[in-house]
Image (cartoon, rainbow, N blue to C red; front, side, top):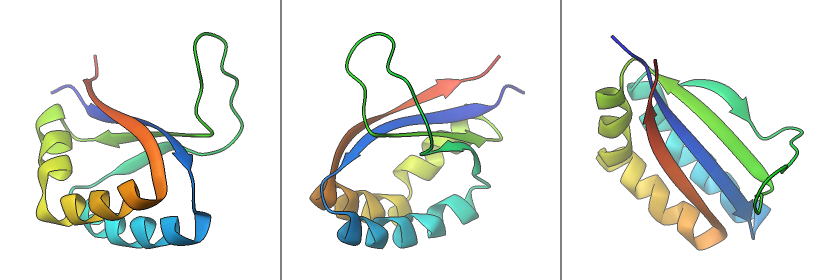
Length: 95
């Protein structure tokens, strides 16, 4: 079965407030077996506009990635994130 991935690109407006998102999101990530492959760190935007924080999260399957995103735990965390950051998340099926 192909893995599923979240690819998130984020600009954090309030680093202190964003910590509340990180703590809340951990509940969903732990529940759905998230494996962080990239989480912040150095980056280079070589085409198009970049964002300051880039995250790649691996899940056992695309279905599990969807279930995590749509879970009550993550939706509560997402509401917190949207107060303190701008960004986008895409869910992608691996090969």
